[in-house]
Image (cartoon, rainbow, N blue to C red; front, top):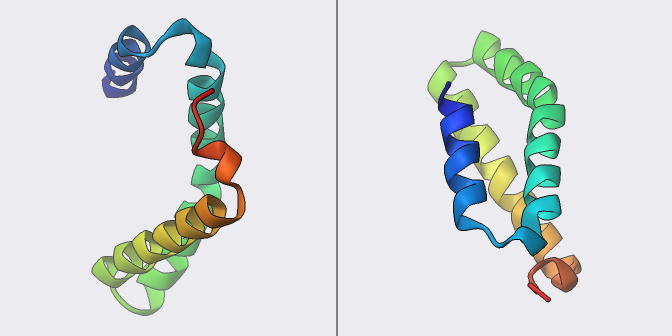
Amino acid sequence: MARAVANTVLFHLTPEAFYGRITSMFTMDQALQPFAVTIAGTIAQFTSASLAVTVLAFIGIIFLLIVGSTAPQLRRLD
């Protein structure tokens, strides 16, 4: 239910020219979720859940920094 509301609000606020980008980001999110859950579960099993969440957050930040610095065309909106 929450995802449906988030999608509705996001598409309502986004210009039609960017619908494809938004849809691809949601699809990528769904495709990568099983990998993240597997990593988080493994880390949590051997340490703690809070450390697992922290490690995944840092991995996500590092990934975004790498992609943002190596693919500047993703930051452009034209």
